[in-house]
Length: 87
View 1: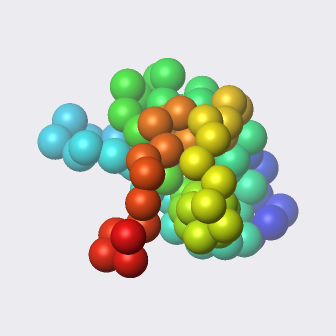
View 2: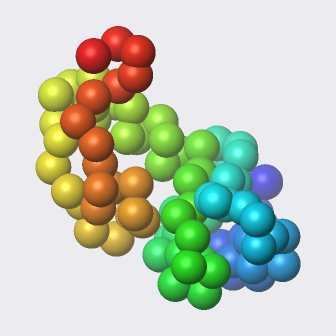
């Protein structure tokens, strides 16, 4: 999976976008999509969540870090305050 380019994932995400979807989820820790998350969000108007993003978000929250981070998508611009249900 690591050989598949971020550009492929961007094209794929735009193709699978559905009007009724609230978010686009790209699952697999071995894909390189983080580089294009913000581009996908701009093209689709929807938040994008990748497995690596979700893991990074969880690690930061568990460490008590709640800072907003630029360049990694909406999940880090509106990072929330707690992990549910483990407040």
